[in-house]
Image (cartoon, rainbow, N blue to C red; front, side, top):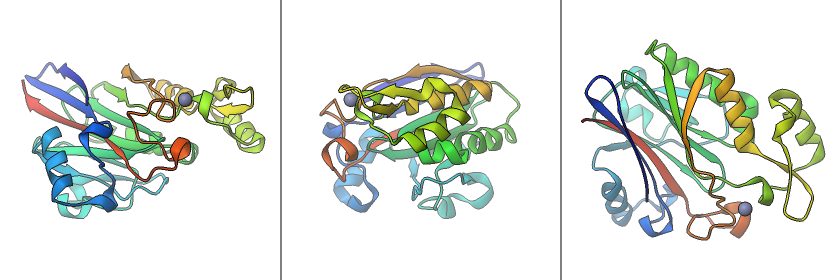
Length: 229
Ligand SMILES: [Zn+2]
């Protein structure tokens, strides 16, 4: 499990954790008492997880209520509540934790589809309705461009929208998408400060689950919550 902690000015601290294979399979379909134990080993706060669908919907957990938010079809969630942990499950897509300086939290799942339809803007804007303070982000591990061969037509469209730097090459020289780069560009455009980025490739690093690299159905989780420091 990887750990990121950051003290806020208001006496609280942000905790971000991202799991690997040794922490257990966090895939939603695998829900079991074993998984409850795996989740509790990360944090015993209540996990708000989503039925991720590669769309642009972001849920305000405080608006819809925790019970409705858990398992909702959405790719991002925000909350100002202190007793919840927001969780994103991924294999190759990019998990992102967000927070405002006064402790409003966000978590999102951003693959290339989510990036293209605007999940990042949708989550950042919703968070801004709950806090006018600066927003920071931690980006978890995802598939690297060297392993992410991509079709020329899709690449052309994404590079027109998110900048030519999203174009990359695989290890063997084929056109590839640097999805992390697109996400960095989008967060920068939205004035969000990236304070940490894990650039481990899920396909290259066998400690992580990868659908694209190994056809695995398992998922790692990125989880964010806050605690009184
Ligand atoms: Zn790789």
